[in-house]
Image (spheres, rainbow, N blue to C red):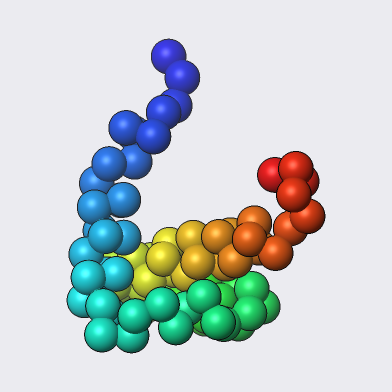
Length: 80
């Protein structure tokens, strides 16, 4: 059995909730650099490692997706 997007439905629901909670920020994330998102991701991961708060993993997942989306947007056409 292979892994599909459906296997991540709970995690993606959490991502959706985090985005909804921060809706007041609009699309400001698109103007942040991939580096900025990656730095925030690392900070959340390090905090999770020290404190084991699920919220940090939730926010790290959102930052990972934001970094990936911005990197894909900046990539030359056909690169991804």
